[in-house]
Image 1 (cartoon, rainbow, N blue to C red):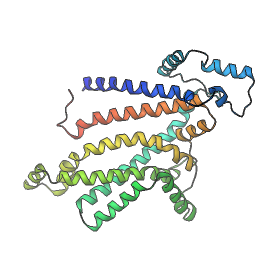
Image 2: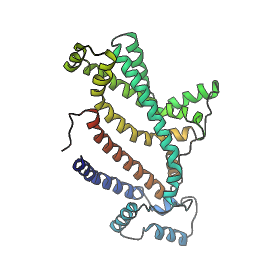
Image 3: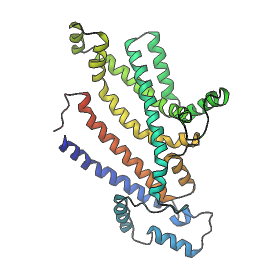
Image 4: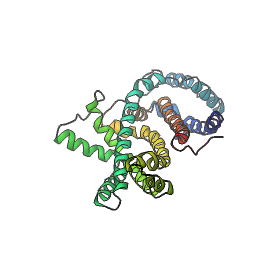
Length: 307
């Protein structure tokens, strides 16, 4: 296991380097001078422009800038925000907990709803229960998160008044954003659970377990469902990274504090150091999520061994 983790960690390094290179070159991919773009509308003096260039190290050769960017990033030094002059890492630390809470709540909605719909559909295959469950899943896959969020706001906040629309404080303000962000992923999980559970229930080991007189519930939970989880775990791991990125739209829609809203504000304000750091953080989070998914395979399927 240790050797496998070390090998997977080493294989992740080129991915992170590639992402870091793209993030570093972000300010150079736009036409024009980076400082002019970042200070558009502020009318800085030539002296202020030169001070910004010196602060960001833009007077150095490109390869030297990249090496400095990497070395500082490894130490957790991402510079200062152009607009607020705060340390970028402090802004991220302040806005990260609400986003992680929203992502965890949305993942809870996705897993709970997806497993429930998928198992019910598989156990009632080709019945009206199956049709209703898969129709709900199809709607979830087809409906964008922002559109579902607007519908939830209209019906449950404006018309019924059950939940507040905006803000980050309290569980009641978390319900609608979590459902809006997690429902589409719940639909994907439901369809996977149904397909894999139906396939697993037709295998010989399931027939053997039933022939031994094991209760049907035990056969489904301990044998069929566990063997159907490998592809589902893969999707859940990928979705967790996607949810962190998808929180951008939901946090703006529900006016929630978080990394997503911070990223949008940074883009609108042309605060490139902050934009670079947030994008890099999301990429690292995504890579780590995939690594944890690979490690979890052995738990769900003992036949998998790491050499």
